[in-house]
Length: 247
Image (cartoon, helix red, strand yellow):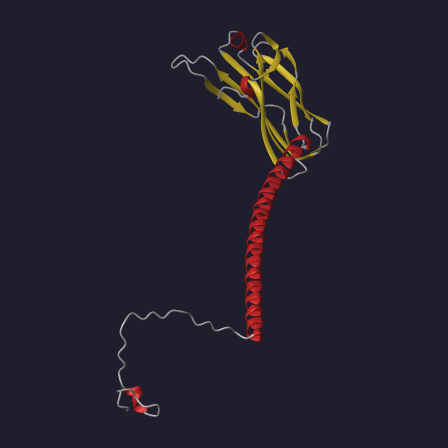
């Protein structure tokens, strides 16, 4: 150390001494570390590559969402269209079968004469069966019955079924094939008693026919037709009200 109290130039112990500085000291600034051009290029390339990956991932997600949405909409549309098509096809088939199916019509217009005393009315004629449909009636089967009914029983005032029997000329057919527009005639004959009561609407008599057949589409049909003496003209038969006798 020198006499003035300053460290000598070669005195390394001065670094261990505390310097006293009076007054305000302000130090400012920044340290800038710049990458080399090679490092900058590498960083830029990595950032661009990451941006490209992110953009590709975003487009993939959007595209996938669009495809899934379109697929869901198409599936729903196809399902609805298929269901509607099935309903339409079923209805069209039912309509077609209804138009083209066999259809049986039965008529009864016999000859009616007054018999000898005690015989009543003598009824003779044919049950006429016609296929008015567009296709063949298969396995047509039928049976006819005569019936009598008291319309004014003394006790309750309600209709009372008196008799139902097959006392007509045997009418029992089975297994008949009846083409479109074809008619077959089945003879029947029976007697009707209580003529005066029929005129007074207190008694009634007639015939009913139970029948069944199939169409070419495999559907089976059951039917009944009913005919009765016309009270206003006992030599005529008319169709029963609601096509049923009163029983």
